[in-house]
Length: 119
Image 1 (cartoon, rainbow, N blue to C red):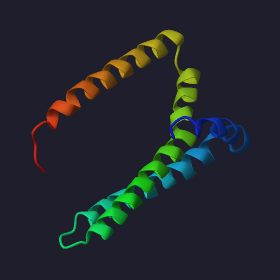
Image 2: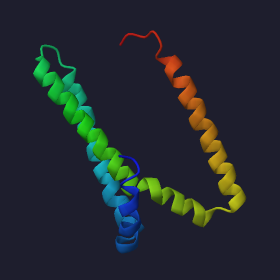
Image 3: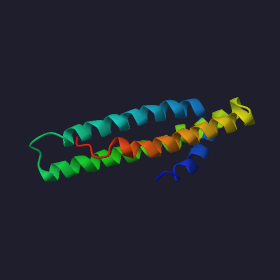
């Protein structure tokens, strides 16, 4: 789900350019996130049947996957293209190292934040 959209992104960038892709895909990502939020809110209503609860969950999952695909068509690969054009190799390596350290730190801390919490 994450890797496959990167391949067509290469051809889309060559054909349409960066700005139209970023504009359209950012709009689509916004719609996908709003759709996810709407279906999660609908899922958490009281008095909803189990079948409706499951259906809302499926739709939220579909919107999350749409977001991931659209992100990998636009912001995912385009960010790295921009970075290689505007930064020196040393700056890019420092930026990637900081990004990796912060990502690993967040991945290690996040589970402990939600441990033994009831929402």
